[in-house]
Length: 426
Image 1 (tube, rainbow, N blue to C red):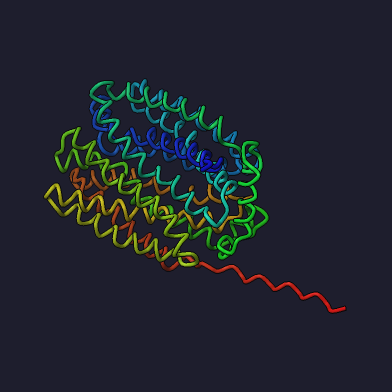
Image 2 (image 1 turned 45 degrees about the vertical axis):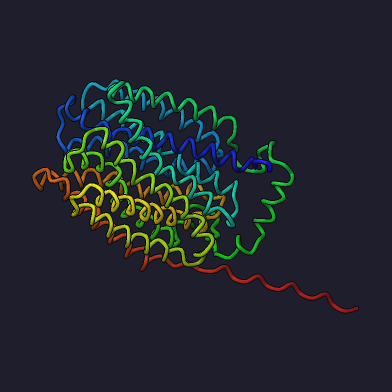
């Protein structure tokens, strides 16, 4: 069986996204050490976490516009080089001010990356399987933190927190080589694509499954912003990320400070929910494409509701086995919801505007990421450094996001094609 070029491109993008998440999530495992060395409290830790999201959020739309204008390949290569440099530079900071500056600049490099990835997905996969491809690549959102937690538990005792950032910066070089070798702007641009694979792409583009759901056929980014659906997705991403990024960023500290686990156990147990989350996110695209075309929001809502219950139980249970079971189920369901949410832009946004459209939606998500760390830091500080209250804040955001998904998203089937007129009889 021939390994399709589109699969190679997908794997290259997945590797890049995994390393992106390794680099950005490493800060979470190193917070206890950074806090001691730089002598900063929970509120300023929130500033450090949010500095990344400020740069990341501000450059989502510029990254998407660049991908639409000059092609996603150049944007991806530049982003990889930029953020790898600033990942390594995180290991040389000498104080709070330099840490904030480096994390902000690191966020700029990663900020131009996601929309370029979605542009690649839009140009390499049809609506028949675009949701599945996107969910597999998006699974790095969960697998990245899981691998990061395991690697840092191993690296930190050997390399220290500074050396660990140097090692992660070096991993970006491998991604840069892989992206340069395999990623092109579109399937039509890649000379290694066989005629059979290109013909299959064209057939899939015309298939009933690819044309069952309506796309927002807009001519420009400005016209796309006139669509209520885009704004609903913007705010869903914003509110949902108050939960997801809060969970990603504060779980290691919660396990260390509240559950009183060792660094090794925190690395292992902190990874488990995200390993399950990666499986859930990977399945989300297939499940959504297979059974929820035209009603994807119900998959999102159901996963958010059940996942939220499990996340709440995690904060209420003292038995380690039971609370980690609750965390793993929450991880599976909440990341499945995230994967299902991101199938919606892949279907609704036309490929020619995929970069700027997805970048705009993800800007909402990253505003949520920026706000959540400041807000959770404040909530924890206001409640006498009780880290459990941070999780209560996340649960409130999850409820709001689930209700907005249910009430605000309107999915439509594509109109049936008009029958061709029968030829006149001579």
